[in-house]
Image (cartoon, rainbow, N blue to C red):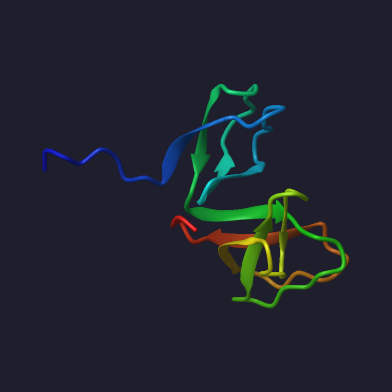
Length: 111
């Protein structure tokens, strides 16, 4: 097929203001990914838009297996709160209120 470009599992984002660390979540517009490497502000950074990742979560919140997971772009953490946040995937493990991370399967679609 002549117009095929790539599978889209990994795409190139511009690193945000202040740069980004490997493994950090990145939301630009309606596209969410997890950075594969550390990059300086404005540099290209490859990000996975599909897959399963342990991401920082909002303190005090819990997730049941299969629960919707949202990205709080201000806190740079996953949250159970949908208001003003972006749906990024589903929890693949139970996360207790004291856990620092949540295991998330990314939707791999734009928000």
